[in-house]
Amino acid sequence: MAVKVETPVLKVAIVGGGPGGLATAVALRAVPGLEVTLYERAEVLREVGAGISIPPNSWNVLDLLGVDSLTSGHPTTAVLNMNGKTGEELHRVETGSLSSRKPIRTQRTALQAALLAHVPKDSIQLGKKVLGLDNLGPSGVRLTFADGSTTVAGLVVGADGIRSVVRDSVWPEYPLSFTGTTIWRVLLPVDAIKDLDPRFMTTGWWHGPTTHVYFSLVGEGMWEIAARAWQDPKIHGSSKVSWGTPVENEVVEANFTEYLPQVREALHRVPKGHWREFAAFAGPNLATLTGWNNRVVLVGDSSHALSGAFGSGAGFAMEDGWVLAQALASTNNDLSKALPLFDKIRVPYYTRMYAHLDNEAKRRALHLSQLLEPSDEERVRNKVIKIEGTDMKWIYANDIGKVWRESVAVVA
Ligand SMILES: Cc1cc2nc3c(=O)[nH]c(=O)nc-3n(C[C@H](O)[C@H](O)[C@H](O)COP(=O)(O)OP(=O)(O)OC[C@H]3O[C@@H](n4cnc5c(N)ncnc54)[C@H](O)[C@@H]3O)c2cc1C
Image (tube, rainbow, N blue to C red):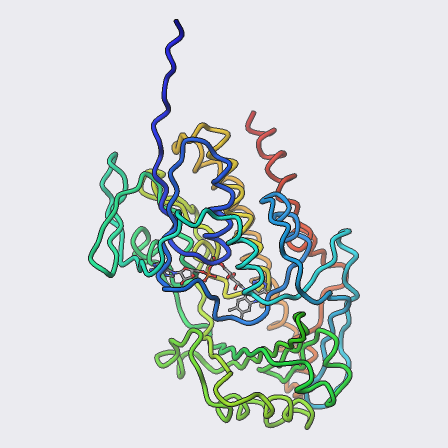
């Protein structure tokens, strides 16, 4: 008689219920031999952001996850860059050529709801803020929560965002710092500002030398405004810790007094109490996203603290979750094989992003230094100029299924 050998169940603790944590939970459903629990500090799963772009790379991973319920959103047919003071159009991209799937801008809550619909309800524990982790060696990892409780898991997935507690526990020296950029975001009904300028109907950035205001429709009759301003972090760093905190309209408007009247009026029409402030943080590239002898892995913003630099961080987070699930499934949950495989695929990808941003910053700084005393107009132009032929398909058209198949073929 054949003896059935039971594979021991691996307890997986996902910390964080953003796009990364939810996508990981969805992807891990298909992996046998796991007991998955997602711990989220919020009492209700509700994202405080505003809009989110879904480029072809995000569609690709949503397809692989089997998430087909993201139906609301506004198609992004063109993206404009304009001088916010003069209205001059500086750059225009007609989108949609990257793949047959059209990019959209939607509300973050719509993406969250679409993912959540595929996560078993009893696997989510809300109001569970992780305070820290302890490495118990072969016994696993202990998670300690703010309510005083603890649990032990065989694998911890750090999906707890850019200010990750999981990352802090394993990489205590990781230097996360304020970039100098403050972001204010709001959603408001289309009718509130559509009379002001027809160009607001097209996704676009209106720039000053160190600021910009972004307008985009996000579907369901709503508009998103995201405004950014940069201040020297050496002077303003210590006070900037806000993340989704309410802010007075006057604080936002004071940064854009040089802008065209219609842009200023749009900011002015935002109902009081609706703006939310986010301070942008960033940290260096990690050489590995796995720690404590393959007991901890980082996915999403915790794994690459780039502060939304490519506007596709939710896509990256979902790709991470899907790749992690493939790595576990293909190794029969052998962490000593699965996590290095995850690293092998995702570390070079994030390294390439850091290198790209570094090169861009150097190129702009060089160009600016050659202008000697640049006017505001030249500084704005310098912000938005693109290198002709720069191909960003490796991000926005990334086909993570193909990447996985090719990586496994190389390993095999
Ligand atoms: C201004 C701005 C604009 C952006 N625009 C886009 C865009 O257009 N498209 C796009 O794809 N991306 C965009 N991004 C990036 C995107 O928001 C992030 O990359 C994405 O949300 C990352 O998902 P995540 O799951 O890794 O982290 P998060 O979304 O940050 O989720 C982390 C989750 O972990 C929870 N958590 C945190 N700490 C703990 C703890 N100690 N214990 C338990 N739970 C915890 C949080 O409550 C949260 O639910 C933008 C970011 C910013 C700041």
